[in-house]
Amino acid sequence: MNSLPGDMENALTGSRSSHASLHDIHSINPTQLMARIESYEGREKKGISDVRRTFCLFVTFDLLFVTLLWIIELNVNGGIKNTLEKEVVRYDFYSSYFDIFLLAVFRFKVLILAYAVCRLRHWWAIALTTAVTSAFLLAKVILSKLFSQGAFGYVLPIISFILAWIETWFLDFKVLPQEAEEENRLRIVQDASERAALIPGGLSDGQFYSPPESEAGSEDTEERQDSGKPLRSCEAAAAKCENP
Image (cartoon, rainbow, N blue to C red; front, side):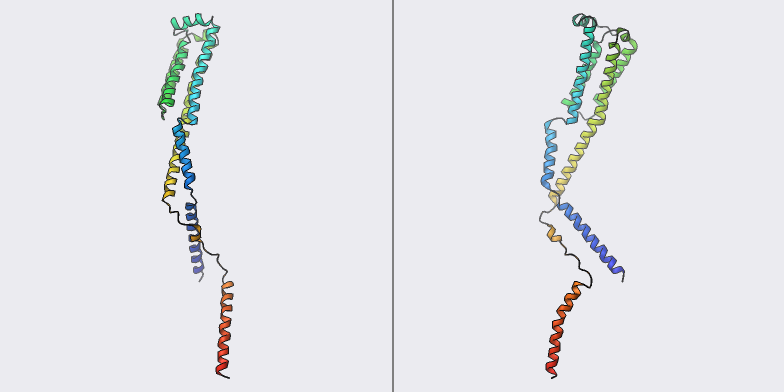
């Protein structure tokens, strides 16, 4: 006898859970999903993402900062005209800073071409520029005589080395993961919109409405007793008429 109420409770629980799931499915708004899809597609049509734009700005800052330091070094060591002739026309690997400036130009051209113009989604371009920069700066520091030429012999190689590795970190840990996450979100929203389009819109919550349960032996029994009283009184009156 105790197993029957338990079965009824399980059946009621299953019906309620199925009703909740249907309600969640019908609560999907295709208009909102299409708005999200249009926003993601607008970002793609707009060009590069915000995080990639920040990376390109940092690459530009790398070039401008190294150029500024090199111009300051030219002014400090006897004027721009004389020092340019010494470092560019009579270039010497062991004493010139011109190659460090050219290294910054090389990083700028490769990275802007790869990640701004071609919109590359791989790390091989940044790996190339960082490897070339690191190898060249290590060789120049070991073989050249920059340390004997004042503070710029320390500043320019160290700044170039640090900026190259910051660019690598920023691209590998910020740009590529965030863009991959945005692509996954776009796929999820598109899948959800396709599923919402397949769901029939004619169903409403009223079709799944179930009246509240009444307590056993309370209202139903009272209604049955009240409906049975007139019937019993009629039967008693008919019996009295037959047997006066």
